[in-house]
Length: 455
Image (cartoon, rainbow, N blue to C red):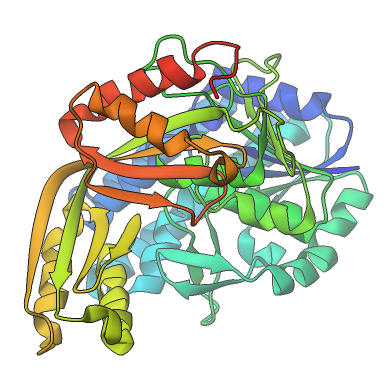
């Protein structure tokens, strides 16, 4: 049996957290490939240094102190000497990269630098395992052969090539009883340079590793008990969902729940590998298991999430629907500028995009510089939020949307956009930002809050 076990920044962020993590790893009897994130705050510190907000010597000293102090409490003396030497060397190479970036900034070097926290975590965890009598092996994404493509800062894994490489570079270690500790967050791009998978991308890395090793399970160890019926900071009686379908988890991750990186589900879904979300600080909790399953709840809502700080951009053009080439160009332009496009809606003469508010200026600039004579005008409506309602087979349940929208009327929330039918498990709609929290609370209370089905 093989498991991929991913541990996030809070799981490697302190001496106590590391001890919990090591205990979890050592209790697991299966062969396991461990994927680690940077310590909490390290990636942000590296980004600040790249932006000129801190000096290179300052960040190097901070990282050396933080990692060495944390590791010294967990690693026995003979092994610690070897570890400290490798740590100094790794941070020295980081300083060299930072110096080079000052003079010649470029995207591949940027991604190399921001991936450094994962490299230090891999080195640290592997040596802690060695000090506990296990064969912990630190492996970078380069050494493992995790292949990436796409754009720097938001790459994707080439699952086929990564599968071939990990069978050659990682699987033999597992078969020999070693515990490979891999760097999350990045792969190797076409130029042979690190390409990161976006913030939070270590979850995705673990899923990629599980897919490549044809693992029996992928575990994401984090600081929450799993997916919940709503954000517990908003809904006090929210509770953990112990079992979900891949599609339900993917929708929630993309549209608001911060439990998983949104792209984590797809690699494991391709091979039918169960994905478990567990709490490092409460390992006895059942957590959430995600796999292909139908919950048999006759369409009851499973969870509700919200995403704020969004805006709607509407672009007007007469008989837009009869100009597919123009629609294609607009979608490509807006999506390229916004990064994430959470909804798209069209009518005879209008196309509307739901995008992050902090990308509005760039989106408008892109639209303006297209010089499309058919575009008559555009408008922007800010301060809106997306509400995502998830439930099994919702599209085939008559009256679900009507009941939810009637509920919104009770709080005076106007529906600005609707997305239904694209997914069998989700109903998404946009309302004013100041109504979002009330919407989540009301939906949870009426359709989720009790053990009885509501439809």
